[in-house]
Amino acid sequence: MDLLLWITIGFIIIGFVVLISMKKGMESKLAFITANMEDEESSTKAKSIIWWIVSTTAWGIVSMILIVWWFHNHF
Image (cartoon, rainbow, N blue to C red; front, side, top):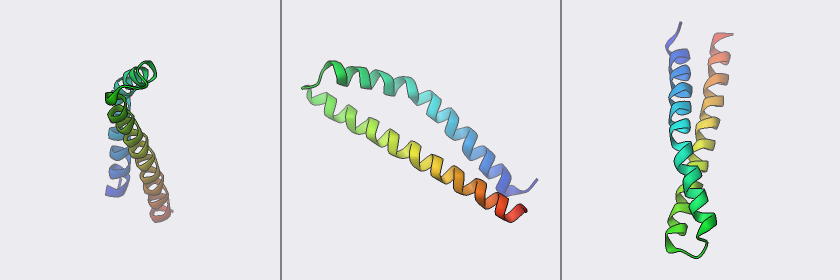
């Protein structure tokens, strides 16, 4: 198999592992935010959740681009 396929598979698998490992922490931050709306710490936790969503979206887009790129080069 070629290098681009291995890079794509590795990127997707590592992304899933990171996503799953961070999911529980984001759920607890969200629970804290909903319980303490006026707290100053809620603002920083909300920003971290927003950045987690942005980075997850970016990871998904890059994964799709890598898959399309591999298919374009392979077929």
